[in-house]
Image (cartoon, rainbow, N blue to C red; front, side, top):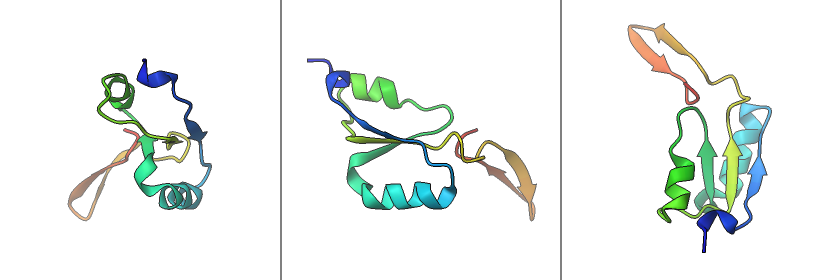
Length: 77
């Protein structure tokens, strides 16, 4: 059986607050899709079997910036 045959709930929150609420609700059964993710190969290999996918790509988390002498890289970079 192909692990991708299982149905997954897909969420694409429009605010960071909504994304956090979704992740809080589904804690252990959710996986995050962001920038360079290896999630699909991990599902195909049977390493992980999330019931819910949370897509963070629309949250403006794609950046690299310097603040206070530190480099900060967004989750979707």
